[in-house]
Image 1 (cartoon, one colour):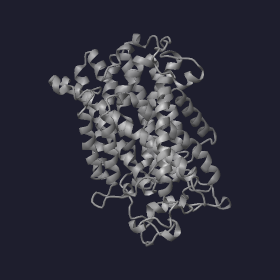
Image 2: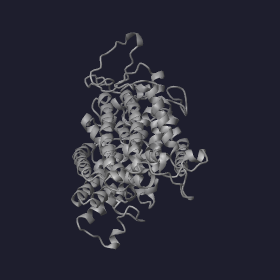
Image 3: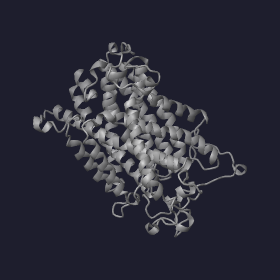
Image 4: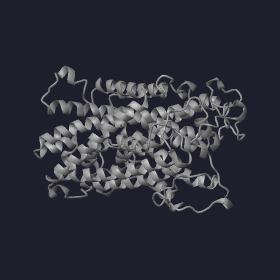
Length: 545
């Protein structure tokens, strides 16, 4: 195996210049379609979904009670801290791949593979689960309009059905939409996001008039012992104590799961290669999206718990059921329609993000190179998108897929932790790189993000950690048997450059046919400390053009 550019094997790091030139000087590159508004829509498209229309009620009924409001606040703080770290890294290395590419540049190939493998777990599980939840709201919508399906047909629609046919069909349709081009998907996404934000505002306004203050008492229900057959959290296992549900620990346990509702801001970073002026637009879209969804979520949680006793919020469609229970059935129908749109956009954005991660891993040689190609017909990574959709279809056929929701949470938190450490590492190893956004109060903010992330991971079940460990062992085996030997960095002299990517003689650091007339958007710009001049911020305290 040929040595990499930095002379290492498993610990080889992707040079930051190579990360940029592989994008700007490659034939297989993505068209730049997204502006700041599109990126905010992308984040809202995935964050406003099953987290608010399903998980909020379930966690209130079974884990935290009315204090689920605090769980949303805790999850928001963790995600805001993580979003700040993601914003700096995405403005420093604005290429698709998100935490995977950040880790490749910062920590090395082996760690990048583990992060990318965790991202694959997060995204494929999210798409499969949300498709199942969508089928539940589809049934509720039909019932709301007086359409009753025969029992022989309805058994294939439910979220817990042994054979659910609706969820795979939905995934296939959305995969086809994404394969045919991101531009079409972006237009659809914008319309749907506007519609579902309007539905949430309607629920908050109408529901606020039906709040019963008695439903907030007790705000923190007394703790209950966990059933003997229940899987304890990792923290409980370490301390040899079962915390059960409700009480103070129930708030943190619910927060660990509710992080699922905020997952989506990190996916904006996977669209960096699709974005115009990504050093500015990606951090802005990320932080604006998290701020907007935090306000909507907390308002929704306050209204939902106030409308109905928390013990009755554990149904398949808790928001529409709560609206119907207070006598506003017309609003329940609107909520069901809004939920269908919301969950559909979640799946779309997740599949887009999954295709970008697979596209990058294929382009780097850690997965088959065919995944790293852009379709000449659709100008999208069609093969990667198709593979992502088929993987989600396969998983959604698993009857107990809804029990895997913590798997996507632990995958996301794993990436959060690496990004927090990555900010500190890159500040030390590449202090002079141009950064469109800088995390304030370093190292305090990254360390707080790391501590909060680890705390939430400790509050996940041991069964989740076991499944995650098995998944990572499988990933290590694939890397050892395939990725390590086919890595582009490891085989620069023998890489198939018929793809027209970069010059094989320079390790991917120069273009074969440099076009001086075409301005490039991405370059690793280093400014020596003695030449740095203080600049006045022009857009926000920490955002610079």
